[in-house]
Amino acid sequence: MSERTLVLIKPDGVDRGLTGEILRRVEAKGYRIAELKQLSASEDQLAAHYAEHQGKPFYQPLVDFMLSGPVVAAVVEGDEVIKGFRSLAGQTDPTVAAPGTIRGDLGRDWGEKVQKNLVHGSDSVESAEREISIWF
Ligand code: IDP
Ligand code: MG
Image (cartoon, rainbow, N blue to C red; front, side):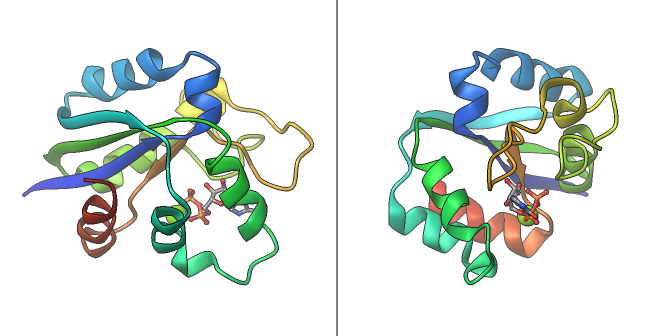
């Protein structure tokens, strides 16, 4: 069944000029970019988006990182796109994310408190609809 997912290209991806490369991979996989914009995230958007992580040691570094520069937000559509985009993205930790994935090919550890891993992808239908309403 066709689904929608929220993809964010995080500030490291935008700053490193990888927006096109990341969107190319999404389109090459066969998914459709339904909505797309670049913006500077607000603290309120990030508090809502990352509510599940409040209280964790990486929470404030994560919010500071997401405020450090513009992000690109996209709604991506396709059958099984939620699982499919997370497969394209790879594991959270870019050091161990498999080669062939966005995080595995393009990311690395930079010795910081937050893992700068280039992209966000929703993890369930419920998360996707909640997150899309935060960013669009
Ligand atoms: P996900 O992005 O793969 O879904 P989550 O567990 O939802 O991973 O974490 C949200 C974001 O918080 C990650 O993408 C990463 O940037 C950061 N993060 C998660 N776990 C850690 C950690 O253990 N140390 C540092 N940063 C982390
Ligand atoms: Mg997550």
